[in-house]
Amino acid sequence: MNDLAPLLTPEGRALLDEVRGTAPADELAVATRLRRDHPAELVSAALGQARLRQRAEAKFGAEDAGRMFFTPNGVEQSTRASVATYRAECFQAIGVRSVADLCCGIGGDAIALARAGIRVLAVDRDPLTAAAARANAEALGLADLIEVREADVTEIDTSAYDAVFVDPARRGGRGRIFDPEAYSPPLSWAVEAARKAPYAALKIAPGIPHEAIPPDAEAEWISDRGDVKEAVLLFGARVTPGARRAVLLPSEAGIRASPATKLPNPEVRPVGRYLYEPDGAVIRAHLVAEVAEDLEGGLIDETIAYVTADDLHVTPYATAYEITDQLPFNVKKLKALLREREVGILTVKKRGSAVEPEELRRKALPKPHGRNAVTVFLTRVAGAPTMLLGQPV
Image (cartoon, one colour):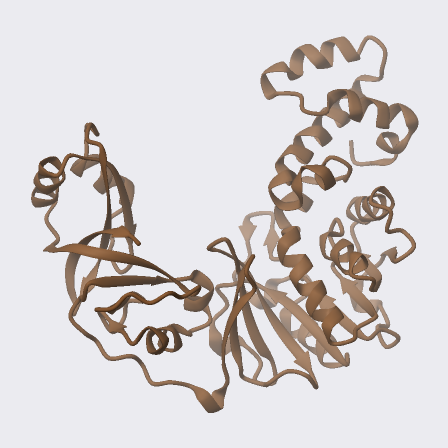
């Protein structure tokens, strides 16, 4: 069903309530029973929407997801609620009272902005997506603050709004799009639209090459509980051109560097007592040098983003591990060591190694039976393939 309207009727809403929480194994029996009293297409649509709501709980929480309406792409591409809330708070903090949300999708960012008291024009050219955004604004009691418009964002006049947020589509029929000019709309158009606004945020893929970042933008990478979720280019009078920032949610800890404060690459040192694994947002933002300085540490290899130090430091920007062993890469030696220490739980991390963690785990610990746990880092130390063994602090 490519139309949400039947699900918005009293019959459709009653069906959605009835199929809420249906397990995949029970769908056939539930569908068979409901089709005795309801159109088959409507029953299928309700069950499909129930599946999407279950998938969306990870992003929106059970309470909101249970009331919202989704498309498959909408669940996949929408902003996680924690990230959208952080961004809305940033807009609110600088006095933004109205935002043009271009390429709004099913309305994840618009919802967070409206909950911050900001008036939103949410625009998407796909009819079903726009319908979902409109239904979500109504379902969450935010219709007074969110105007949803089905239109081509390139034809929208945003001059009446305090800020612009642009989230171009970065997926196509074959999956992720890596060429920024193949975004929909292209990155070049989105940048020009952002430059016209008093303040603007432009969402991009976290893996964008730094050389593709416009010189007049400030770039921010955001992680949530250790997973890098997105990167954003910021434009306007309140930003520092060329600055880079990493923000870690849920704590909102942030580390930042501007062109004027750029640090040289950290020195390469022998592996010390502690190894620090920087958060992914720190690595994407090229702020490992700043974290290394804060930790009074150095790198284990000039090309590897692991920081080593002899002392333990508390930092939100990296996870600390106490290193117990340093071995040249050798699966047989590792297997013997794990057996000797009665290791039954093996966590494998890698950086700068072609070996797949699951492959090493299978070979080094074919029959887990011990009670101890170890973390193994497959990496390079001063250019040599190395295994570092340790425990998280």
